[in-house]
Length: 152
Image 1 (tube, rainbow, N blue to C red):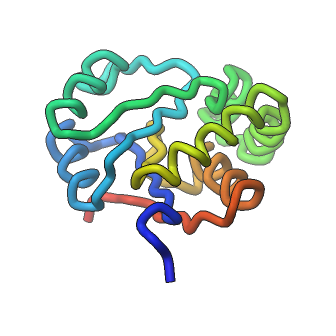
Image 2: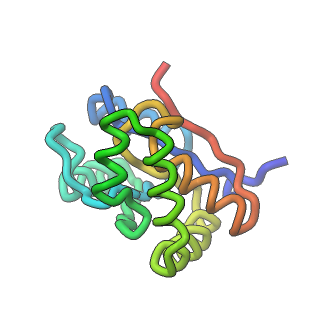
């Protein structure tokens, strides 16, 4: 049986208004949102780093940005072009760097402290690097159960 801190959630904000996004996090019991975007910027209102952190704080959710776990530009370009094999190779290389391995270790500690959720853009977790981050964390840092949050 999972303990609350052995579950790692993921979420993509694509298509979600900020209020619904925060409601999903609260319904799931998330206490810390871990932003794994390389650049925590967005053209969508409410999802740039400062606005997101402020909205989360108002909802009682901590914000943590871990850019070392973000997708490099070449990976973002491959994803946008639908070159998923290339995208996955780029992300696998990124996650094997010492910087990313250190960030994964820190993420494991943070995720064990309180119920946490990884954030990126894509609604579909199969098309987003956050799934690869979550799987690497689970495989290399203690077997987290991964739960993808999505709007019904």
